[in-house]
Image 1 (cartoon, rainbow, N blue to C red):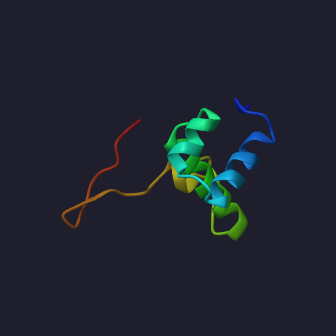
Image 2 (image 1 turned 30 degrees about the vertical axis):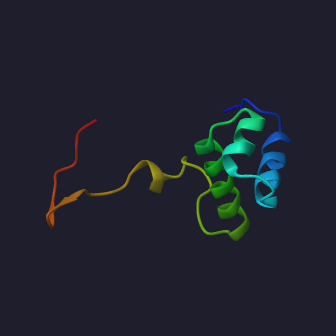
Length: 80
């Protein structure tokens, strides 16, 4: 899926946020992003750098959380 931003935009924004020279809210505003988007981009970059797991919501683990539990009981899966 194509991104709405150029290939260099995201790394530049993340670098600016990591410098810590301004609050994340100000950095997001300066670059025309929401704070939530900026925080998500930073988290994705940290996961990629540490190799701690999937860096996107495209993995099977992210799409299918497995059985749901409620008060210790397994609930039936919802049909889709």
